[in-house]
Image (cartoon, rainbow, N blue to C red; front, top):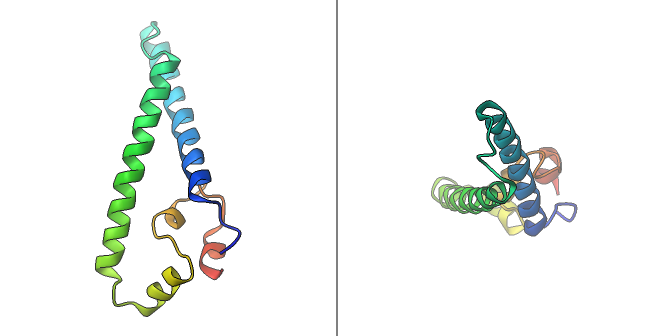
Amino acid sequence: MNNRPSVFVLLFRYFVTVVVLTFLASLFWNTLSGMNMFPFNVVIGVSVVLTVLFNIVGWVVVTLGSKAILRDDPEFQEWKANGGRPYWDSLGWPINPVPPEDRDND
């Protein structure tokens, strides 16, 4: 599982994705309202909060859920022993650009 990006790279990509989506939403809202209701510093702040919140909640739910549901599955235990990361490997493009087949076969 050497070709996978590190957790920090995935966090950075997650943050950039949230910034882009939040910025586009703010542009749409500002265009509709005719005022600059969401300046860029608010976009960055909201993006930081959403990134932290989504990743903490997602990581806790996926980690605890996989432990509860798959605790007796030998394939899952072997995958984890070989470096599998339940939450981080479940994220898709653009955050995790490695194809799912490559994440499972390493």
